[in-house]
Length: 112
Length: 111
Image 1: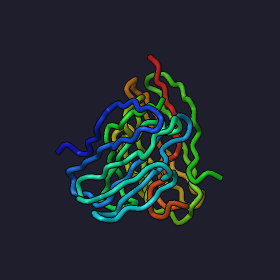
Image 2 (image 1 turned 90 degrees about the vertical axis):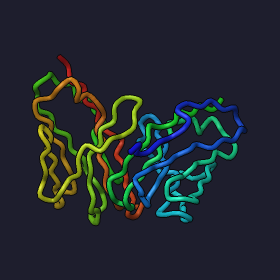
Image 3 (image 1 turned 180 degrees about the vertical axis):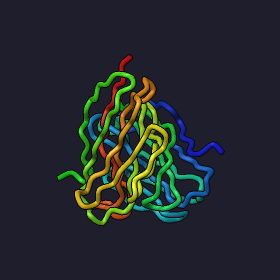
Image 4 (image 1 turned 30 degrees about the vertical axis):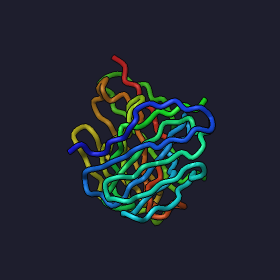
């Protein structure tokens, strides 16, 4: 099993550009989530999904959209990139909310 | 009060030392507790779950104290490879059943 995969590993965007961060898992997990990690702030939840077709906002959802058309995939879209979105983004999955989560390798995003 | 609070460290210890980290949580209704390890520029990885009765995995021991609302991680016989940031993770709080991550405690093991 590949576990949780994320692409790309690195990305540089200009302010105002949009892009999609890809996330996929092969563990048949219902729960998937996106976090951003900034120095000194820990992991903050952006959006999450409890199953295909169901998504909800986390702690810091502004500027991001998600969709969950299949159990396996949970892409994160940046609508109009801003320098404040420079961060490391992690996707994670688990059997259900509250269970141990497994993380992808992360995407390092820089917005100039 | 933060929902999950950890001493950021760093804890600098020699190889072979025993080191302990504590983490406090604010939601008395929390039911799931974990310790994750995160290496520099890598993703967090599950180290161990924390059970009410405490649990041990080799050199690592985790304890839960519900009355005082803290969990602990004890590392015995520290190795250089234990150098990392250790994240305390708890479910519940303002995020509902979702996991809340502490900001981590950094451990540096020196030769």
